[in-house]
Image (cartoon, rainbow, N blue to C red; front, top):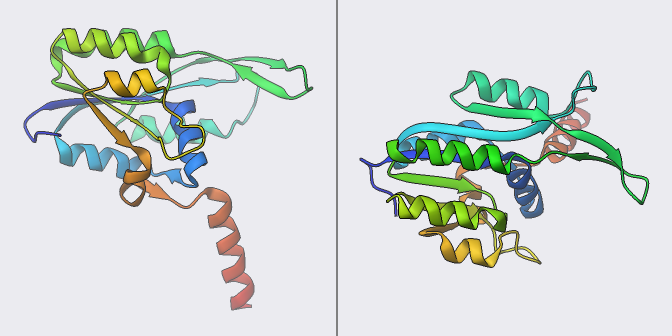
Length: 191
């Protein structure tokens, strides 16, 4: 469902894609992801949206954001609000939906196809609006989890649905914890 001559843009809801990949048991290799969509068409831009906690000296997402910035992605970040939920767990609230929607609408006249990495049903009106502008929209998420990580109305609205599970061998790698455990086992076996 991709054409080599079409201009593509990727819009990645970072938190949603992370949660979806984690549910499927793998991590995303963003270098491979970018290469895959460069192969599928003329990649105009690849956006990655996430919130950051201002107060933390080091957050796990910071190295990824830095890497993405140096490797062909446009990262859009904003500070998240930290709070403690009713169960006493530390939570971060930060919503990038409006930022992503505004950027997609602004870029719509310069692309033929937008690939949206999210399962969030709040994006259904965005997809519909982009389609009215003549832009084809593919949505990447999964229906292979219980419950599905994609809202049914978003999947139905999209021109194409790509199950992230089907991209696993192309853009995936073992979760970081598994890679660390594997490395430890190799080091123990070597000693």
